[in-house]
Amino acid sequence: MTASDIDQKPPTLRKTRRGGRNRSNVERETRSVVHPGLPGGAYRPFTDVEAQRVHGAVLNVMENVGLGEAPDFVVDRITSNGGIVNNAGRLTFPRALVEDVIASARRDVVLHGQKSGCELDLSGTNVHVGSGGAAPSMIDIDTGVYRDATLRDLYDAARMVDALDNLHFFVRSVVARDMPTPRDLDINTAYACLRGTAKHVFVSASAPEHVASIADMCATVAGSETAFRDKPFLSVNINHVVPPLRFDPTSCAVMEQCVRHGIPFQINSFDQAGASSPASLTGSVVQTLVECLAGLVFAWCIDPQAQGILGPRTLIADLRTGALTGGSGEQAVATAASIQMCNYYDLPNSCIAGGTDAKLPDAQSGYEKAHAVALAAHAGCNVISQACGMQASLMGCAHESYVIDNDMLGAIMRSVRGMDVSEETLAEEVMASVVAGEGHFLGNPDTFARMTTDYLYPEIADRQSVSEWQDAGGLDIRARAIAKAKDILTTHHPSHLGADVDAALRNTHDILLPAQLTS
Image (cartoon, rainbow, N blue to C red; front, top):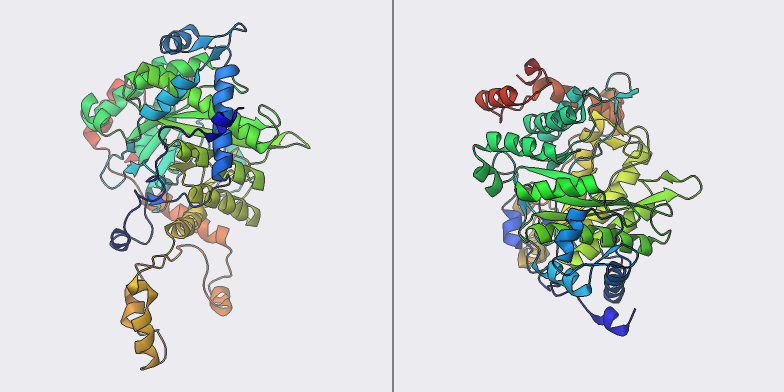
């Protein structure tokens, strides 16, 4: 790496990203205590000089190492825009091409819901938190036993997210293992997600030919293809690479179809430090960024207006066993570092945080989720998935975890909101009035006013006295959360998808979720 590599900043680096786009204090106070899109970005694991060095390393690897196993349609797209296939047959990305893509890629990505008020503005360092996981198992709410997940479980998980205020979007939390074919899985996953919540949903497509069917479903729900393109309420997760530094042809074809159909998509790379990427955390971050930017270059070569979201997933292995450690401190800081670099490029981004190693929603689950999600949020991640509901390093999902994590995420978002400094909040006049009067602040008008504008109150966490808690049965948080989750599953039946639209979807596609479950 040369000195010029270190000194060079990407052409899109804007001073406004961390400050200029943030909402005013006045606007904050007119909304709820916490809400989607609060600006983060205060936590930065890399210094400015270190971030520049990471950027230089990313450019060097893309230009000199490149990615292997690129399918012909990817090679054709990228080489026609300046990419080069080297003597080893690897597709490389000249510095100028990468910088052009970073400079001109879309930054105005807004993900919508099926109703107003569910918008996710991915500009700047706006933070949104939600579900995810694609777990193969469900933790039964009655027995606590792990079992194979079903399509009904997926629909119920979507309903849980729909009912909880601090969960901003729904990424499929479980894989419906009762689906007979991959096509049935993709189509019914999209349906169950769209039927279960009006919030924005993220799904997957196992084959490129399935994307058109998903797009058709979205057009039916929206009323037209144009209406969906204008306000997309569904996105696709795409893992376009197989680390280390190899393209996945099928997933690249899925990406191409998403671009053509106007579907936003996450450009994900799952690198496991010490296994499929370097053991050094910084080196693993570099490789993950290289792979994500390679996917963005490909999408940009198809259409510069493609709505791609960088999804660096720098994962950590316990080097003693090779097992994934989703709740480790290394995982939390590596995730935050990856997001810092996405913000350095001023590009929409996502991450996973909250993949605790705990098998049940216990104390370990709480602390592992909280520190991982908090660091990602304070780093300014636009889309933090796997932030709720997940257990066992993303191998299991629990309904009661959504309820507990809803409280946790509210508290984290309150910390992201931070504190306002103004003449009013400095409270000099309030102090003077109180000491000259009653001598306490409990009955002061300022205190009453701020009870609902400055303070967030948990729904499930216990703040009773010991005697009150004992008199109420002495239940721990999991027991209270199970009761709340069962109430949601019994009473919350989203009706945003009208009967006529539901009938049209069922007439056109092979929907396997029984109609009586959604009525």
